[in-house]
Image 1 (cartoon, rainbow, N blue to C red):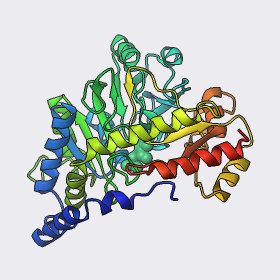
Image 2: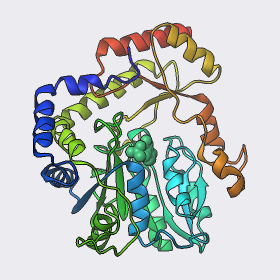
Image 3: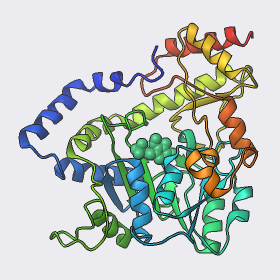
Length: 372
Ligand SMILES: Cc1ncc(COP(=O)(O)O)c(C=O)c1O
């Protein structure tokens, strides 16, 4: 068994994906093209957002979002603060830090998302944005986050790199309603993954849309007149073509994935701590993460011996990342819930096509290792 079997997602659509790739190569339409345009339209129709801009990765999408909001490259932003959760992939914090902004870290709650009880106390006159993350495929607490952002007149960038297909109170992730801008990733292991790097940025704001289109193409307004400092940030047309084919079965894929997550929870809830999903949330289980009380390494080794590979999300919380910790003045003990998660989380195998028989092997192995 693999931790994630991505080949099956290709195998079941092999005919149409191969045809699409050949067609793009025959047309040699690699950068910009009809597939990119179609994908942007399809995904914006799906989430109900006005504008979608394909970008070269989720990380680039986060950087471009900050640039689009007016935090320009090449300028000094050292007095501007951006709040991110302590438990996320490094990219969430790296994007504002890369632009010279000050990162402030917020601990997480029992859903693995930004703890809104701790958020308000982190805001001061220098705060310009919050980047909530929908960790492991479950949306953060947006009613509270958007309320706090509105009251303090600060931007919200929805880091939806793990949550395309999820929803919060029937509002879809990436609909542009859970912040000023949303960013997703098409990294191969994501619920909607391509065959390389890719991402998309979503917004309902026309000005931000125009900025994003320029910024992903070196700030070019369309005539090789460079009006902003941007980057090579486009989603390439081959990846867009592959995503168009994969998207055709996306709803069924997510239904399968959700059922797989619920099956694990049902079978494991009396043995380990299973992920807590708020009743108003629909998760896409980008990762299925349990928590064990102790002996994590030993448990993982034993599971591995029984043929069950596992992974760690994330073994080092953001505030302790060597490149940030000292500069930001954080130390061990500052974010207790995230630090606990970093030491006790174990991610179990899950993907869009995982078989029930494979899940049963995982469940039996956990019962055996934990002696229940
Ligand atoms: C929460 C989060 N933010 C940002 C990113 C960055 O996305 P990418 O890998 O496409 O650059 C990821 C992807 O791993 C992620 O999980």
